[in-house]
Image (tube, rainbow, N blue to C red; front, top):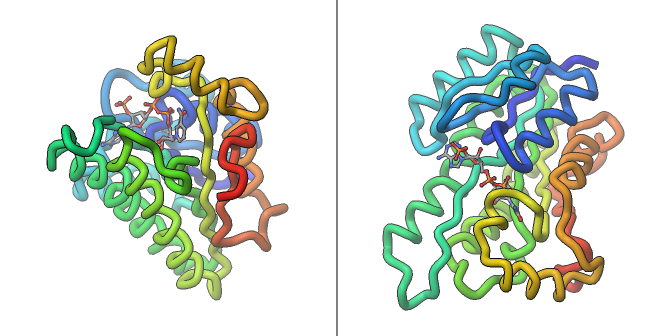
Length: 239
Ligand code: NDP
């Protein structure tokens, strides 16, 4: 199977692990990156890297054009790119709130909407959104991020219903704490506190999230849509 796959924010962290995993599965992988240089290892493996800021509709359109020219219409899209700007509610500026919503929720809308065009025509496709356990449980200091991640669930389930008759699935992966730049930015004390709350007692490796994305993108997951799959070491149990 060699499908045209697009992973946003595939230059590092979980996105990079997803790109590697899908390339290992034999797919034609394209990633978007926003800053810096794309990872050499992906380029050497024949993956395509396109520069794209998902807050800019024109850049999203241009990225899809580049991917379609090189690999054909996108058959699998993984909306992974996101930011956080953590702050307690009273200290959170409107810009802290709207910029996180703009990237994590509206940016995902742009990416998924554009992918759906080709998928509808082809009457097949796989859409996977990366949310977070905190979208369901909430998190002090993350009202903006949790709101955006919760929004992805309603968005995904609406898209799943709209596109199901065309054989397009749309699912959400909700990771817990994963060892990436995003969580390394937390202090050591906070990191240890978090580990204490996780039944499995450790952070996830990015590859453990990637494995679930790879499954949801596969033929084996053909009958799964509108699902929220936790990869959180048991942190969100009950939500
Ligand atoms: P990182 O901070 O390591 O990477 C984020 C990626 O998103 C980078 O590639 C970044 O690009 C890209 N990005 C951010 N803003 C934009 C934008 N406006 N346009 C395009 N790309 C953008 O994050 P993780 O790998 O940790 O997280 C990946 C996903 O998993 C995110 O959706 C995150 O919310 C989610 N998640 C992560 C958890 C964790 O514990 N790490 C837990 C739960 C969910 P650039 O390199 O240019 O900054």
